[in-house]
Image (cartoon, rainbow, N blue to C red; front, side, top):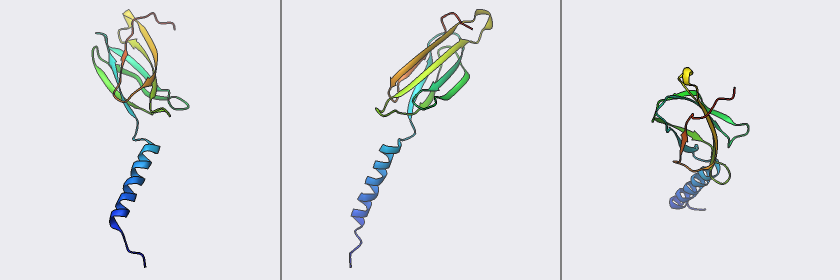
Length: 120
């Protein structure tokens, strides 16, 4: 009769858990959206690593020189892809901005701003 080997079972469980985490991911990459201006912005951001792209925030107000953190999915290379648009809260002095940020790593900061003309 084969004996029960606890250390071997424990090792097998650890290997299975770590392998599952590597394959399934740990929930994503944490990315900071930073308003690098002094005015409040309404920000919309999309996780472009998913098909179709998933909205992360929609018209979320970020005060001047403030930031917020979002979680995005890591692609095959372990990097994320985020796009954003921003518009000033002040409707009298309306400015807009947008950008596409591929190749993001966990902990990266993406600066958002609205310093261009709005084309709507």
